Image (cartoon, rainbow, N blue to C red; front, top):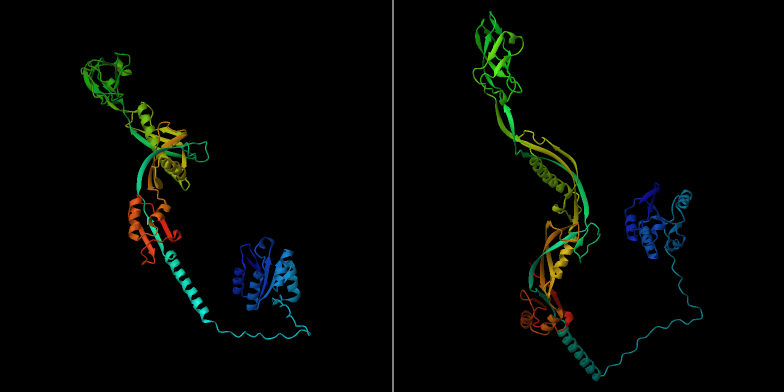
Length: 513
């Protein structure tokens, strides 16, 4: 982090992560000729060597920079001074120096210790003379040649035994097996219990809404149409009597009279009769009356006219129509519930953390904030709609925790003489029955791949010193291998396996599914 004291001075605050190499690169990129390094307390951890300051001094001298230091720790001010820098106790002191002198002094070259002078009374050193070599005897040369030859033969023998190296790659036999392992989710545990197959979970919840419609299955009766017919008016007066349209006539038999209205005006002659068309005032089969049931004229016209119907009235009919039942409400609730749970499940998937999954069958309805049917029970309607809002919760489960329990089950049922080298997992449905000790239990189908165990010491014993063909045959015969061993000898022309264990690399590669 940098900032300027003056236009020609660059101030560099040393951070705990800064090194002399980083600061040297900063000096190389500077355009100003004066630099002030500030070494605070928290950044003094790595500046404990004189060499750290000498690196910066050399770069400053190379670029002809005037460099000074501000060191807050009094115990650390000695090292930059020994490296040739001017050291201040604070930035204020450095600013005061700049105000007075206008510049920082350049770094000084450290003074070399004075040369040691020879005292006046000491004698001058005598020049060294090499001794004159004497000729060596012939027998000594022969002995040395013999020793050299023995050493060369020994080195050649050791190289023959130790020099070659071998790499053996073995693929053991494998088998697969499958187990269905129950995994229980317990809301009270915080970590995986491999012995009981319990894992913790994290509760998530959302509020979701859906609308569902079902056909009405009930039957209701509806009334359609008004009965029509003809009545005969009889005039009791000695003069014509006009009966306007809308004249009301009715029945008198029964507990509830059926009323009709004339649809056309008619003029009834004196002491005579005249027909008139009628229509019931209300819909329904009750307006279908038998002949001679209409015998009353309402209002003032009843004083002058008498009425009867020589034929029955007809036209009013009843029909069966769909109606809402309690079973329809239950069906609509079940359908809307499925839609809400599906929507809530998709929303809760977005709340999962990396490495978690949500068992769909473990969803729970916490509350029903809204439940609105479009029709009541008994209402006539071909369909019944329901708007349903539910507060739904679920338990987010860690995939790693479920796999740990399933892997433990695979390892427990591992065939003898084999080691588990690979596993795959499939997550099934939540158990409907209470089969586990936890809040709910789901099943994990675990597929394991097991490889036969191979002892590397025995491998070495079988091939030590053998030819490549004999050693490979011995390995195929004595060991449970899925394919012939892959042998690489270095150098390639060497025909035998090494006799030194350290020169033989044995690699066991598990087979594939």
